[in-house]
Image (cartoon, rainbow, N blue to C red):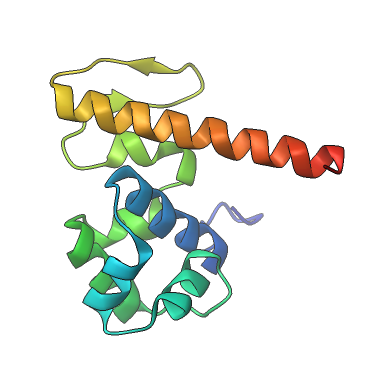
Length: 129
């Protein structure tokens, strides 16, 4: 947010949302890229916030993931699960999880595993290994 209280739309934040939706749905970057009609390397630049993300790009990615395009631009990456279509999971300051079915539980477990792997990788980088 800027000093006026408006949300600042940044490529990196929107790109992280693209990435989180992709991970939540266990989708490969190549699959999204093929849907968009671009190369995988081009798509991953959007996820990293290195390429300018247009309204058209947000619309197409939202169609691929079957989510409201506003969720891709307004959701903070830490709150994606809460906004993921019909998900009973909620992540906020206090993490809580209520699960309704096996598939949703598996998605949550996969996401948690990925986050733990990312944390380990970050630790190694910070430790200089």
